Structure formats: C-alpha cells, structure tokens
Length: 312
Image (cartoon, rainbow, N blue to C red; front, side, top):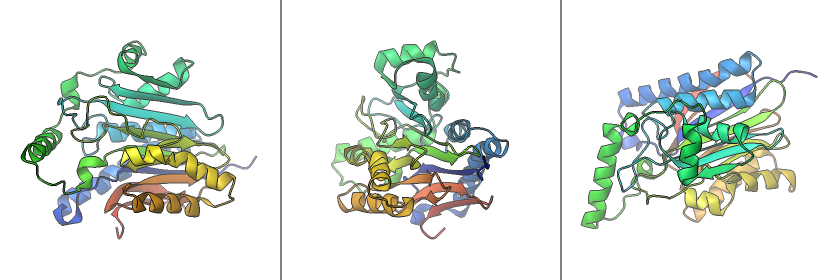
C-alpha cells in the first residue's frame, strides 16, 4: 500500500472580527495561532500518526487559545455560564462521539472522544454527560478557568442590546464561533473534530450543529471529512455534513462542487457560515458565505497556509 501525503485543515470559526474593526496586531495574533494549532496536528500526521489523533491535537490547541470560542475562551449563555459542545468522527468505521452542554473538561474534544472510545453510545448530554466526564480520566477545570474578560464583555453588550431593543447588527463574531479540524493520514483514513462554546447569550440548553453527527461534523473514507461553523440551526436543518457526503456519493460530485454549493445554498436562505473539508484524495475545500472564516491548511505540497478573509 502506498502511503498518502498527509493533509490537514482547521477553522477557528466563521465568527471573524469584521475587517473594519481588525487591527494589524490582532490579525497577526490570529495568523500565528492558526499556524501553531495546525502544526500540532500536522506533526502527528508527518510521524505516521492517525487522522483522529491529528484532528484531536489541533482542536485541543484551539481549545486552549482564548482567541477562539471553544474551551478556554468559550462564550457565555444568558445565565452567564458556559455550555460547551464537541464531536469527533472516524472515516474508516464511522465511529463517532459527541457531548453537549458541558463545563468542566479542559478539552471538550477529549470528552467527545471518550464517549466514542469508552462507551457504547454516540452522544451524551445533561447531568449524565457531566458525571461521565468526571469519571472518564479527563483533566477537569473550574468554571472560572474558561472565563475571559472579552467573552464577559460580549455577553454584557448583547444583553444590553436586547434590553434596549436595538436591532441586531448581524455581527458574525457574536454568533459563529466554533473550532474544528479535518485530516487525511498516510494510511488513507479521514477524521473530523469540532468543538464550540456556542453563541453569545444563547438560551441555556441550546445545542448547535457542532456535536450533531451529519450536520456540523462528518467523516467517511469514501467521501470526505467535514467540520462546519456558522448559524448552527441552519446547518442542522440542512444536515450539512451528510448532504455533502450524499452529493459526492450518489450524485458523483467532487468535493469542491458539493461543499461550495451547499454553503452557497445555505447563504441564500439566511444560514451564514462555512466549513472545512478534505476528501479521500487529499483535496481541500474551505467555502464560506460570511465576511470571513479563521482557517489554516496544509495540502499535499506540505506548505502551511493561514487566512481570515476572502482576500487573505
């Protein structure tokens, strides 16, 4: 069997700071962080590691960076609490694990992976998910560890906007924060992982597309690995991950057409956001219909790229 050239891509969410509000210093911070988080997974792939280990490592790095809305730096609910979601999926077996509404594990992506590897289930939520995490040999942190001044200020500003009845300005940074990674390893296997704190000032108990297998997270070796970011309700309704898979599998579309068309169609009905995807041949697709999407990728050429806006 001929080894494949490893391929990996990640996103830090479609909730980018509007270009008009971005400073050169902040933009440089994002590019540096995206590259470092990509390298965490790329190193594993280059050493012959699995796609699952690679996407897990990259998402863990993103979760540790308060620039992104996952893990440390997760946004707040209207109750000023954190409720984090995550999912992982393997392309060779479709094994998957997901977790929702948790606060405690330093790395929610590891909680999702533990569901896949330590239970017979796919998805855990609520008090049972919390108890599982406490007994799954995960590194646990106090709620304060996840809190940042930036996210608290964002919550207060959104609650004040609602109190005053000011029209929503559609700022994507408030609604579309998620992180994720997809990879193809040397053995020809795909994997995807996604993690999020959700939407700023979301209703307690709200679940977006990130932990929903077939919506925000998907992987199948025959088609593609996908991690989405955006207005989760739309991504769930359109079963985005599985929709792209179906167009590739049954309509014979390539990844570029299937993924780009789905993201375009979502935008036409108000579903802003984007996704990252890698197919079984190592092709990468990073479509989005929002003002920007924090993203990084390394294709078969071995070169690391980072970008935020459509022209960057």
